[in-house]
Length: 615
Image (cartoon, rainbow, N blue to C red; front, side, top):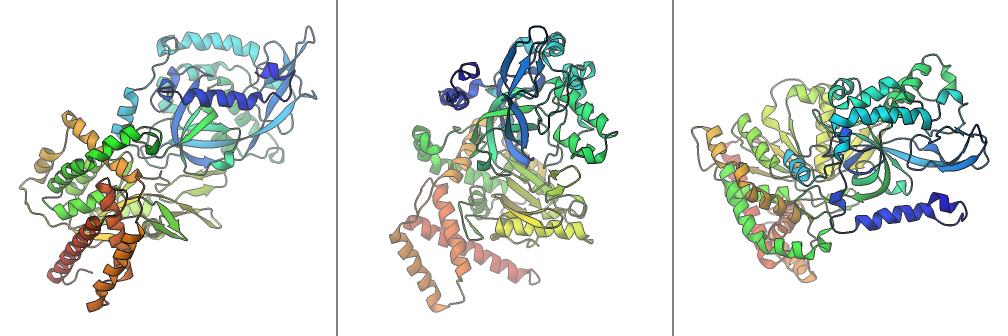
C-alpha cells in the first residue's frame, strides 16, 4: 500500500490499512485468533506480528516524533528508495544508509501510553482466558528461539543503520540502532533472565505482587479519545527489536559524559521511557476496543449486540439470584438479610454523575464480623465471583507505609502508581478487623482521607506535588469491621449470625465451592456481571408513586425519613430490580426495597440499644 501511494499521494493508504484490520476483527471468532500478551509468554510471540493486549492505561508519556517516511541511499549504486517508518521502532536499511538530508523525509508525531495488565484481575479470569488462547508457531518455541535470534543478528547487522555512522537528526526519535550481542543474548534467554532483569526495573504496577507484561503502546491517531485509567483491548504490531535495548544502553552510557544542557532527559527518565524491549515490549496500535467488563464468560461486545445471550441470561436471573442468596446466607452464618445486601453491593455501579455526586454507588459496611480469619475467607469467596478485586488489610503498618494515591515523579517524568489506581468495577475489600491501637502518621492520615474521598465521591486526588488532580473512578468498596466503620459508607448492616460453628474454618470450607462445582460458580459470575451492566429506568407513573409514598411516610413523623433515606431506598430499589433481571422499577420492587430497608434500620436500632456506646 505504501509503495502504491508514491504514485498517488491522495491514496489514503494509512486509513485503508487500519480499516482492513478493523473489518477483519469484526468477523466471527477473529479476535480469538489473535494471540494475547496476557496469556502467551513474550518469547513465544513472533516479532512484527499482530497481537492483542488487555490492559489499563497507567501513564501517558509526552508525544514523540518519528520518521513517518524516510529515504535510503545505496552506497554502491546511489539508488534511492522511499520507506515507511510507521508502526516501526527501527529503520530498515539493508546495505543502504538513511539520507537524513532528503527533502522527502516526513516527520510525524505519535503518542506513547504506558499500559499494564488490569490490576487485581483474579486467577479464574486469567485461567478461562488462557483456555481459548492462540498457541503461536512452534518455530518460536524456546527450543528454537536461540537459532532464530542468531539469524536475526546477521540480518540486523545488515538491515539496521548503525547509529554511530550518522549525525543525529534534530527532533527525530525513530530508533536507529545496531546489533548488540549482549542485547540479543538477553532476548534469547528471556525466560530465565527476566526475573533478574525485572528486579532492576520498576514496572510500576498499581498493586503489590502483580505479575504480567507491561507495554509501551504507540498511538498514531485520535489519542485525545483515550484517558488515564481507561481499560482497553489493544490490537497492534508487536515490536521487540533488540536494537531498542542497544539504543537504551547507548543512551545510558552517553548521558553520564554528555553536557547536561545537551540532553533534555535525565538518566532516570531514559531508563523509564526506554526500558529493554525484552521486558517492556512496544505495541504499535492499529485498533483499540474499550473494555466495558473483563469477564471472559460474557461476550466481548455490548449486551445489546448479543440479544440471544441477553434474553437467555435474563430468563434465568431470578433462579440464579435465589441460589446465590442461599449460598451467601450460609457464608454469612445464616443471615439472609445481610446476604441480600451483599448481592446488591456486588452489582452496584456508578451509572451517572450529577455535578460532583456519583449516582448508583453502594458502599456497604458489614459490621459484626467475628474474626480476622473469617473476613479473609470471605474475601477469598468474593474473589472467586468477581473479575477484579483487591484485599486491603487496614493495619497501622499498611496505612502508614503503603502508597494508595498515585504521585507524579518529576525526576523520572512518570506517574508513580498507587493502590487506588484501579480499573472500573474493581471490588475493593477493606478489612478493618486488622486495625489495631496506635498512631496514624502523616501518610496514614492521607491514606485514610483518600479512602474516604473514594467512598463518598468516587474520585481519587492524584498527587502532583504542587497541586492535586481529581480522577473519577467506579470502584465497589466493601468494608468489613467489628463495630461501625471509621470510614463513611452508603449502608451499614450488622451481621446477625444464626449459627455458631465450633470450627469456623471447617464450616466455611464445607460451603466454599471447589473446582468440581465450577459450572455453578460460572452461573454466579455471569449473573453478577450482567446485572451490573443492565440499563435501568423509572417510569413517570412510578416516580409519582414514590413521591406520594415519601409524603405519606413523613406525615406522622417528619424526622423518621429524610431525603438521604429516600435516596438510599431508591438505590436499593434500583439494585433490587436489576438483581431480578428487571430493567424498570415495579411497584413490587419498590415495596420490597422499603421492607428490607425497614428491617435493616430496625436491626441497627436494636443493636444500638444493646450496645449503648456504639456510634
